[in-house]
Image (cartoon, rainbow, N blue to C red):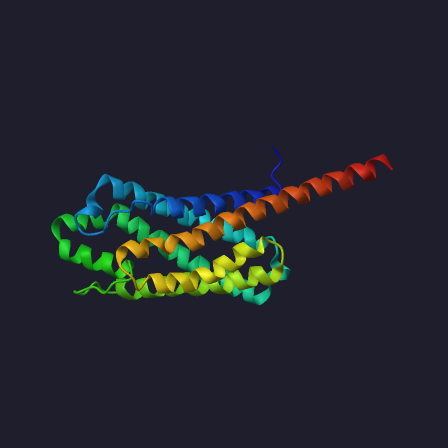
Length: 224
C-alpha cells in the first residue's frame, strides 16, 4: 500500500471516530471515583483506554486541521493548539490515574482523594501542589479549545457542520455539567464524543470522495 497524504488524513478521521467512541464508552457505568475504586482493575482498564482515547483524538484533530489549513486560518490554528494542549494534559492525567495514583492511594488515600477531586471538577481539601493548577489549565484548554476549533471548522464549511457546532457547543455544555454531581459529570464525554465521531466519519468520507474524484480525473485524462 502506498502511503499518501490523502490516506493519512482519512486514517486520522478513523482515529477521531474511535476516540469519540472510546470517550463515550469509558463513561458508561463509570463507578464513583475515590481512593478505593481507583485501585481496582476496572479503573485501570478504563484509565488506560482514556490514554488511548486522548492519543487518537490528537491524531484526529491534527488531520482535521491539516486537511484544510487555509480555510481554518489563524482561528483554526489557535483552536487546534489550545485543544491539543488540553488533550495532552488529559492523556497525562489519565496516565497518572492508571499507573501512579493507585499505588499512592494504598498508602495515602487522603492525597489520592484530593487529586481525584481536582481532576473531576471538585475542590481538594489538602495541598496537592502544582496539580491543582494543571487541572484548571486542562479544563480551560479542553473547553476553550473545543469552542474555538469548532467555530473554525464550522466556518471552513468542509466537515459536517452539525458536528462542528456540537464540538463548539460541547465546551459550554461541559462547563455546566462540571458543576453538577458525579453522575452528571460523566455526561461530559457525550457532546464531544459524538462530535468527534461525526467529524471523524465526515473527514474519512471527504477524503474517500476526493480519492475517487482524483482517480476518475486521472482515468479521464488517460483515455483522451
